[in-house]
Amino acid sequence: MRLYLSLLILFFGLSSIFGAESVSTDTTESLIFRLFKPELEQGVDYEKGYFMDRLFHRREFHEPIRLIPVELRYGLGYNGGSGFMGLKNSGNWLELESGAETFPFKPGFKARIAHQLELDIFKINLSNYFLKTSWLDMHSGLNIRYASILFPSKIPSSWPEINSTWTREEFSGKLLELSWSQSLILQRYESWYANLRYTYGWANSTFYGQGSPTGSGPSYSYSLGARYIMESDQDYRYAIGLDLKYSQTSINKIKDSSDLTPIRKFTLENFGVFVTLSVFYGGELTSGDRGKMHYYRRDYITAKRQLESFVAQHPNHAKRLRAEKFILMSKQKIPLQLMKQGMSFDERGMLDKALDRYQRARDLADTLLVPVLNERIREIAYSELEKAESLLYSGRGDEALVKIREIIIWFPEFEDRIIFFKTQNLIQKGKTALQYGFHFKSLNLFEEALKIDPGLEIEINVYRTQIAADLLALADSVKDFRSVRFVIYALEEAEKIIGSLSPGNARVLTALKSKMADREQYLLNRKIKNKIDEFRKSSDDKPQPVELGMTIPQVQDLMGHPDEIISQGKNAKDQLWIYRLEDRSEVLMTFSNYILFRIEVE
Image 1 (cartoon, rainbow, N blue to C red):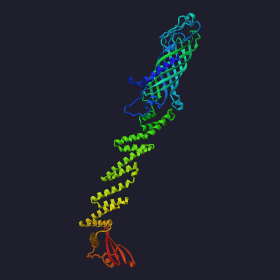
Image 2 (image 1 turned 90 degrees about the horizontal axis):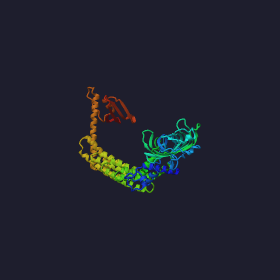
Image 3 (image 1 turned 90 degrees about the vertical axis):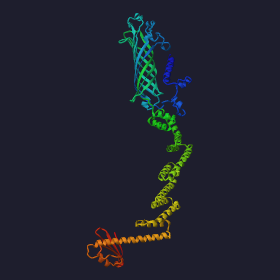
Image 4 (image 1 turned 45 degrees about the vertical axis):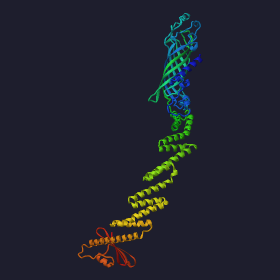
């Protein structure tokens, strides 16, 4: 009988597990594909092994269900007796005293229906709680069960004739049981799970209601069911479902001091259907489950990160070694993923992103992939170099310098090109300055380029000659003394640049210097005269002007004693006289061998 019972439970259990899975309406598919059909997204290129993983390893990294504080179930059952699965209505389900056994007690179908209320409390995942592992979601706790017959049955009318104390009219048995409950949860999908449960305990029973004989004995049960999970915003979640249950209760210890019943012991086999409501903590997907899905979707970078997070958070998880295996496989395949991403960006012209992927792939790749990546990076480098040169020769030298520096960061082989870009940028700026007439600015730029690369001497000399020619051409067109001063400077600089001037230009430079010297002497004498006039304005006598060639006594007669005398040489033949005027200016007179030969006003 128990073999039949086990087969029945297995049949209904498989039906409940697989029945909740959505199946295809295509009847041409085989049964196994209809029952175990994995989720497939159109357009996704799944990694090899995805189908088998969905079939046998779904949710292998899930968080264990830590605690089921309350699980309540209510249902109806049928009390069997004997025969196939206890359904045969016979009297051998109970044992009677001598005399009464010839009159068997055979309750009808209606009298065999019982209702039950069960409560499982504080069921903890012992392996997770004590060992911090997650071998199975197996929970242990206490079970309290109450059961009673809904419709009492008449006892045989012959019993009172055998014994006058056996006068009770109806059998209305009730059970109260305390058991140890052990359950196993199998969850393959997020929305529901299967539950296998076993209980073993001790039951107490009454036969005829209050004050009647009582009995007790061992009891055990098996149940199988499915639960639908209801999400919650709290830490806990709810589950509601159906259970199929078989239980057997043996009441073999009877307390009947008043001899009210001939029943010596009985055994009830109950087959029932229960509605179950559970509250539980845990059981959610972890970063390991999500990481594995990323692996099968060929996103190895995200897979590695999430699986490493899973191992760190669950170091004692039963599937830790398998998670580490996925991490290792992800590491091996990340370079290929990065290269494919780079190729995708490359095809769309997004070279910055493509280079980033190629470089990261090269840093992680094995020796077989590195040459391929290096060659593509080299091709991109030369392409970018051409763009930098185009910027340089179009007058955007600063941008070209920025670009070549960026290229050198990821392609150091071009580091020697930086000198070329720097000097060419300076030369381009120098040519532009020369074009707009800024001769000295252009010359400074050319000289700066020459300092960076002395090999440019010949090219820079060409520009020097052009600048000198331009400066010499200015000499004949200058009229005012301010411009004369500039042209003198320009001719002197041109002489430095080209080494010497032509005889004509040399004569021009000499004449201009003489002209400027006469002009400066004229201006100096005017200043001196003005200062002396200011100094002597209080005197009625018309002052004689101080002139070069006067002796020290002659100057002293006209100017008076100086505010300061600085003398040197033998017998103080060389002297510097300083006169300080009211406007804080100074007149400096220099004597050589007692003769005035220079006058300066500051």
